[in-house]
Image (tube, rainbow, N blue to C red; front, side, top):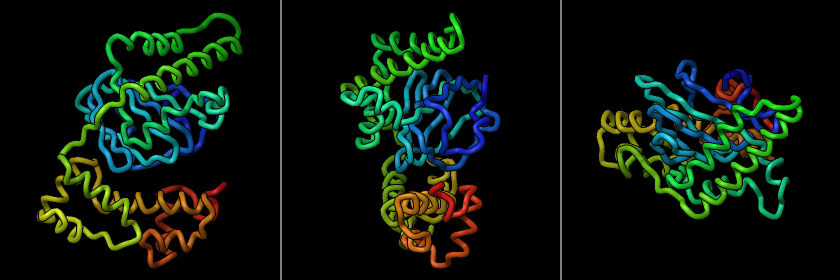
Length: 278
């Protein structure tokens, strides 16, 4: 089985979709990142929280997480238990064009706009979805092109079912450590161009620096500084891709010195600001 790490560069997909069934935790530690494609995470067993934008979702077995393209996220994995999951990458432009009148990827848009990205499928409808996943993994009859075509139909059926679920049964969020960290994440995301120090953020919540830093790390799996840096760089990346000058994008995201922005950008995203659009 091809591993997720075999795709050399995050953010790009060479196929219409890519299906992974992963049963390990080794090598899965990643900081906040985003993709150019839509992503489905289906937890089969294990303990994992997903930090997505300014929310944190605690997944239960058989939960499905919808992550839209350009959405910043990170998995926080408990390695003390086996981690078994299915991950599907999808070319949003292709699947939204298959049936334009229904838009197969509308489920990602609904999840993204509402913030309700986690789906807990009711027991009576789980069979349909997990039957499709099993068929995808076991189909073998006919030629290679026939198998590929059949797998494509299973993905389309899956998106249809998920669209129905996101429309009818949106699930509430599960945020660890309550509203304090949620409030902080929202504040950071709304003030990326302003000063964001630990002292300032902790004082807003009337917490000591050490207590605030511990709560933040437990909730997000990363430090305050690392989260702010990643969030600023990814937002600058989005602005540059949309046409903003790199220097202006740096300034809008709190970087006073372009050279330090350039170094951090290239180190964390693996490409220079000038080449990010390519």
